[in-house]
Image (cartoon, rainbow over all chains, first blue to last red; front, top):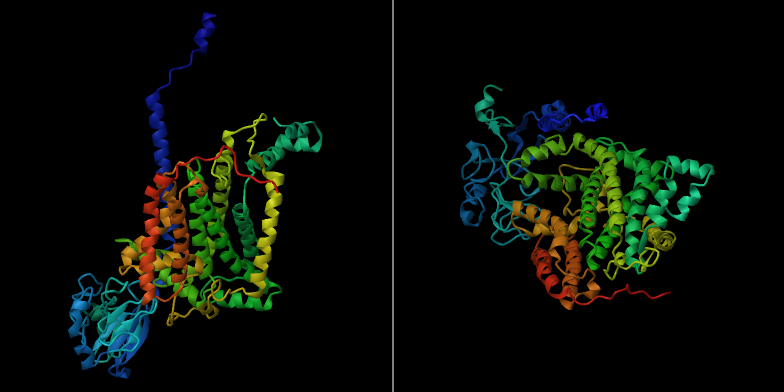
Length: 207
Length: 415
């Protein structure tokens, strides 16, 4: 019987070894699972052809009269191009106190447009025509004192979706659900009348 | 082991089957041996009706998928083609579209019932939370389904909703690009939404519904009196105030199903757009990235939250409050500190509070359909404040006036 007892003895379990093996297996498995997730997650990023479609867009300014706006597409977004008249530029001066971000500190624009007119050339205003609130298209309300808005309306853009108001430099008025000014894309000029949306002035020679 | 099971084990095909697949055991556990309180009222139709609409959406969805071609160039035309040229798809496609609205009607009433009778309170907190996750998955499912046909409201609604993710600090822009798979809503967006809408989310919903039912079988149903029938068992070990779900409630539910399908058929056949509420006018023209509809509103079941989003004059805080307004429901089991579950055994303050909340939800729903200007903005702000006030006040009011005496037995009048 004593012989049998010796045979039946359960070998002592090395708890620390077992713990280590469990942790090592679980850890390796978790790392593997995360690495496996990478291709699946990354497959949602824009494809090569979607990226290629994001090439620069050219606009011929000679066909745009002062006071008019043209709309072009760049990276699936509408880009507003406004030929501003001297009166329109003068309208930008009087309402800094009513703006959320008059100096465009919080807003998104290339460094070379971070000025009061928010433009490379004051007479040409270029901005992405989607409201910085939730992406609707702000409508043009260029007439000062527009009857649908208010008597002291200086002229600008009005988003019909949630009521955000922007001036003629795309700066957002207080009381709008949008928090920042209209986004300005990188752009540059090639000569007097050729606007290239999507290329910085510094890159232009290279492109 | 019950008599039913003993019988089944005696011999023959049924015994053979049950040894290999516990069919009779399953039926007994889920239906004939599941004791539900005998005092259910009409509010208790909506659980089984929600399951019915889910099945209807799956079946109609399978048939819509047979003709639908996801993608920017094909989606709109394939819907036009199926409803105009494929036999009877003029009926099946609107059944699927109208079904989405009925799903939410049923789910909102089901949630209202839980709030009336305190069904989210212990021990049913997880049951409620699983239900809320179902509600969230359903919102995602409905949103993507609305985007798929690529109508103009599909496009602009998607624009607004996807851009909400852009308000998350730091990662927002990259996240939005990742969700769309393009610099704007495009082919990649529509095809991935199709995949999620027909495979991933329905599969997740089925799993969650199964979990919801398992959790319900574990705790047992609450009832209009909010007292636990399991605490009063008869000599047979069954609750004295309980009756087997089958045949009693399966038969009762058939009445609800009949009424529901009658209403559903009336809407599908005579007013499928429901005055622009179930299908919005701008969605009867194809997506146009250069023309925002004069007035963007989501479908009615999202408008309470949309009204909250628009009420705030700051984009990030607006999006945050909107997320919070939905998440607030998750905390109800802990915000409600009353001893009694049912509104029947709470004071006037609780009744007024809950009643005000139901009205607030409906007013916000209406406001979300209105343009965001003038008096509507002011009203949206007032009712947004009232909405959140409910969750805060509940914490105090429930503690103060929800502790009166409750009856020992459920209130029941034989018919």
